[in-house]
Length: 579
Image 1 (cartoon, helix red, strand yellow):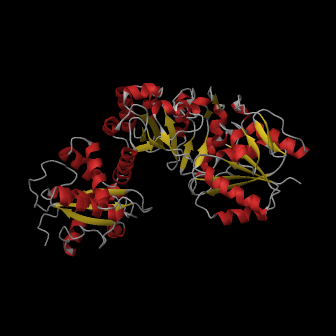
Image 2 (spheres, rainbow, N blue to C red):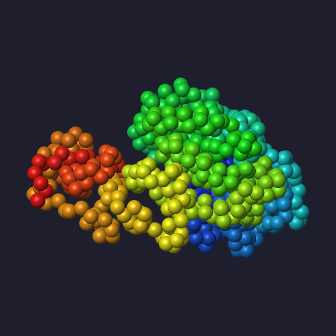
């Protein structure tokens, strides 16, 4: 009897694997398949026990750069416990050197090259019939020899892809839902695997609407489209309109956009939707013209900047990517690309480091660019003709600072004032902060959220001790980010405490303002809030020295009942000095 399981070791618990769900549905008329979505952080022995206990004859694994090593460790352990279990491999990480992979890993019995939905059904049919799978794009082992061909399989008709979300059975609590409205990419970027598969294929619009409606009805928190360029889809605007018209006020949809394909009509449609209904990822990658041409990246910076600013103004959440390690981009050129990106003002700056993926043009021509890279996945670049290893390590330190101090949005007022008043560019600030972290040995330490504020406070004491306004902004950012009063915060007692009687009067004077802004009863407002007084107004960043001791600015920081959004509300002073 054949009993089969498909296993994915995901990068995080919140992730799930769409591919194994497709494969299960593709063979549903042949055999029942069990699915397991584990994490690479799960205990190997726990996973091993679960799989062995069920008595599977065949176990399939989905291979990616983030799990190939963990997959192989688990497979070796499975075969050591029960050598009769047959292992099936598939996924992008084994599709470009499949024969070599089979020869180096004798535990693998079958390997599917490329897109697997059609080939997996053929493979299982042959297994159930007791025959060798003599089909294109399938490798198999027989008496220690590897047979088959390595033609890359492509599902030409995307309508043949199984419909996964006919109901909510594959929607798991606290996990992202991954969705695919199209497959393939029209572009030919040299660092990407998508360029190796020609042609873009689309689902029927009616099918897309039906499945998206299930996510909306289920009130899924985040749906991530895995389409390589969502806005290449001829139905892109219809899908956006559908999501706006059926908005449940909860679900956010994440999509990758190619900036050169965004037009004014697309932006005008977005303006009709709720803020944060959409989360867009835009691949800038570099603003170095020679680099962009070499990697076949389409688009001009000034046009991308303009369109991204419009996206931001539409109320959408924007992530923009840069990649360090591309050809012809040295340290100074990358710094310029960063400042160009920063000037757009995205919600998140994603600094990635080039990985030489199997099958990508940059890996094939790596010697031309002097690339050195780690031999184990994820094949990250160590150096090239333009960046030394030390350059890349410094860029990694800066990336860490950008993630902590910019992307989390915990220091918006402080960073804005600092960069505008003391630095020639945003890059020069993050560079100096990274050097400070390295000097003080913070880089490889466990740093809490409060630690970030305390480290920033120490940095400001060292660099700008005379600018008291910076302290005011740091305290404002601390409470605006949802922090409560804590003795661990070094600036806890920087301001004088507000007299209890004055506090009650302050709330009474501002009662209507608070209730209108929050819908909360002032009598219970302190359950959800912190009130702080400031010597200057942290919202109006003008003339920081004037009236520094005025002590007339009061802000109440109120959390929503679900503890997510923080509202900061200026409170009109009572009219008497705080006693």
